[in-house]
Image 1: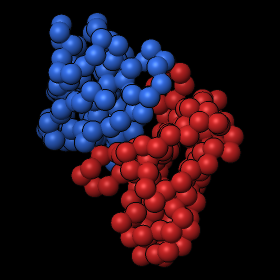
Image 2: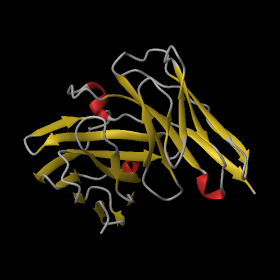
Image 3: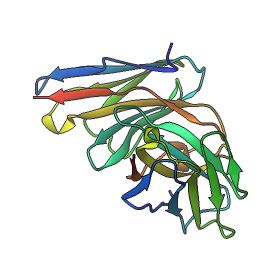
Length: 115
Length: 112
C-alpha cells in the first residue's frame, strides 16, 4: 500500500482556517485520496475524497497538488467541534481486490482548536 | 438506528476467556472490516471481508478469528483473551468503488 505522511499534531484558533497537509509521494495513478476524522470517543467518519481535481463539500475542501504527491485538507472556519484526529488514506477505487481495499489508516494528525 | 451497530460497547473479561464482539450494519454493503485502536497507534486492521464467502487477514490477525454470518453481520472472536488485547475495537462497512466507509461506535475491551 502506498504510504501517507502527516504531522502528528496541529493547533488552530476557532473561526480561523486550518490547512492539514498530507504527503503521499508513492501514490499510484489509480489511488484516490480520502480523508476521515475521528472525534473523541467516536468511530472515524468520512470527510472528503478526490483523485486529481480539488474538491469541496459541506465539511471541507481538498486541494490536491498537480503531481498528486501531496494534498491538503482545508477547514475554512474551524470550530471547537472540529477538534479530532484527521486521517489521510490512499485507496484504489477501481474495484481491484486487495491493496487499498484494506482501507489502511496511519496515525493521523491530532487537531486542537483553541477558543 | 445507527448504520453500524457494535455490541457490547464495553466489556471486561479475564485472561484465557473466549469472547465475541458483534457487528451488524444496515447499509446493505458487502465489505466489512474489524480494526483495533491503541493509544498513539491509530487504527490497525485485523480482518476484512468482501462478502459472506470471503474472509481476509489484516495486519494483526494473530489471536483473532472472524465469522461472516450474513451480509449484515461480521463477528470478531478472541479465542483465549490476553491482556495485550485490551483496546478499542471498531467495525466498519463500505460499498463498492469510491464510496465512503461507515464505522461503528466502538467496543472498549479490557482483558484483566
